[in-house]
Amino acid sequence: MNTKDLGAQIKARRQALKVTQQEVADLADVSINTIVAVERGTGNPQIETLLSICHVLGLQLTTQLKD
Image (tube, rainbow, N blue to C red; front, side, top):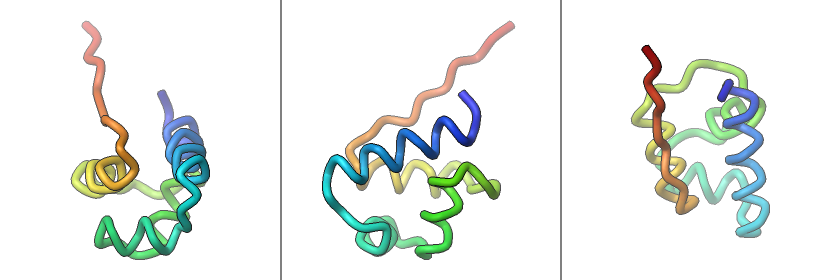
């Protein structure tokens, strides 16, 4: 999964929950600019930031390691 796909999934979940970017930012303790960048698939957020956003939205962030 690339950053654009991840951002699209986060945005879709936020919209399904009918919460604003500002509400997610406040609950995740990040800036609204961070939420915008994540949803667009731009920037390079730290894993802690992604975990916090996913927690707020009730999503699990998992990784798949390949040989």
